[in-house]
Image (tube, rainbow, N blue to C red; front, side):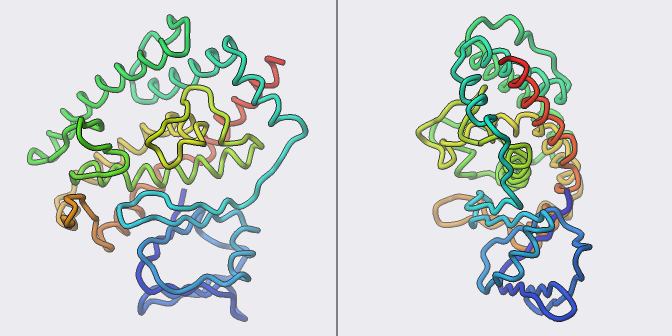
Length: 297
């Protein structure tokens, strides 16, 4: 996945020679159909994107992603929204059949952790709540091991895990490491949303994850399911990025104690992490879910 990051003063429009992109004092013109990005990520910007530019970007399957000041996904414009006859209803039926849903959820959890070099006994779960509890315990173990690896690269890190009794790390990062992870996972989330639409599934119907009251994205559990399959890429990329001392200085503590990553550091992070997201693999993963749904009819 290749990503263009835009911040502050932005203007995207169509001119005679192609797609004109202005970000601050830098201007470039790209001639379609050779757009080198899978997504354009915009954060803390003022300016505009013309309708003509949006038509070209979407027709060439380039997503437009909006992040808030903390790196959370505010909005995502998918390139296209394919629909296959009856697939949405079959997805709904599979999710509401306890046996079929459990089977698909197990396959998602198993593959996701195998990519994280773990092999938990998810096959032993007999109910979805049991599987979710097993996954939660496995996640705790995983992050403990990840923290050890982080310490070898950044001994003075501030990582205290992805869960905290007083705040939700996924929505309010108060440590630098969690801010880095949140920004990076936002890229993965955008890629998963695009992939889900490409294969004709709907994000509102999931298998492993269910709706939660605290999440602004609670209504789209399939996005969280798909993200499980790509988290290992993000976690490894973040470790590699953190290994470079020059990347550890571009942070700002805000009045509410949350961490904001400065624009140039954000640009560096996004440009480094994005290529680690394997869009083709995600597409095959989503197609495998479709095939399982079809076979189980």
